[in-house]
Image (cartoon, rainbow, N blue to C red; front, side):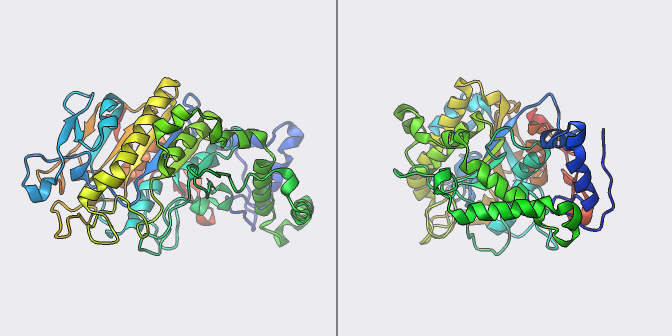
Amino acid sequence: MLEFHGPGKVHTCDGLSRRDFLQVGSLGAVGLGMAEWQTLRAAGAVDPNRDVNGIMIFNLGAPSQLDTWDMKPSAPAEIRGPFNPIPTSAPGIMVSEMFPGMAKHGDKISYVRTVYHTAAAVHDTGHQMMQTGRLFSGGLESPHVGCVLGYLKGRKTDLPPFVVLPEKMGPTGGNLPHGQEAGFLGKQFDPFVLNADPSAKDFRVPDLLPPTDLPAIRSDRRRKLRELVDTAVKEFEASPQAKLMDASFEQAYRLMTSAQAREAFALEQEPDEIRNRYGRNRFGQCLLLARRLIERGVRFVTVNTFLTVFNEITWDIHGSVPFTSIEGMKKFVAPMFDQGVAALIEDLDQRGMLQNTVIPVLGEFGRTPKVNPAGGRDHWPQVWTVWFAGGGIQGGRVVGQSDETGGYPADRPVTTSEVVATIYKALGIDLEHHLPGPKRRPVPVSDFGVREIRELF
């Protein structure tokens, strides 16, 4: 493997020193462009025989394990809740009656029923750990899985390698990062964020304006940035952010001028039958858009089922206003979710894309075993359920069992880091590969030797 070493004093946000930057810039002289450089960076980190993409569904608010995918029908009423289990197409696996669509695809889905963490029982910590594999600590923000994939493999087309739909997570009660950015990899590896509702009648992607709409000041800014980069060989130490600024602008300009990008986001091209199958709501149309993006070259998409726990009904079922109750989940949340995910699995399968698209469906923690006086359940990181489909994950399996109250793992406890390692494994990323961390200190993809959930493969 070809390596470039440079102990220069100035570093860009992705860990390259000035000397490294100049050496990379000189690759063109020997016939290597940036695409080839990206390949060199991924060498040894990515399995060349696996071209797997990902659609992560993050259930912001945290579904109750006892009312969804780990039911306890023999437990007392204050534990088991109001819903009944129904069989799925996978022998012996039951899910809540709220998910008849999912039940039809049980043979394609595998559940992990013993995920837990020991950090604070607040939304932010779970968001971080379930999307990065690490907890925000000491000012160190770890990168989202999709950002790592984009860093290692780059873009396939004019489209960005990683997209977040419809927006990044908003306030959830804490004041910490949510784990949906590139963290120590640098801002240039942050995801493209839609910032629009694809179910709206006037849906339009804000960052895909036609070139004729670009004001003269933007063209002038681009010219000045180009001049800044052109002088980087002589003055890079005096302008350490030059490369980052130019790269960010180039990415935005490429999107705005790309017919390919505009076509990928053109949901109106989908037949009404398909759009209706996913559900004419924000979540359903985000899932459909995720399929279109993966189909057209995006490597990873994260769909946030909800954006905040404060001004919309979510999985955060405390029971008291402004939150919904367990019964309210059946009325407002579950039908939308069930319709959308069943449509996504079926659509990907029919198009021959499911085997090459891993779908991790995650939440930040579980819910208390006992129903509270308001008719809801509160935060409970001691155990909860996540599930996977596609991307080489074997369907029709259950990993781990919770105890009779659904409150703690009875066997095979699974950490949040193992969940994230499983996503990396499905994507073909070497868990022991080192990323350029803060101050160029290497940070392994999967921390402290954590391995994937091997029972799923």
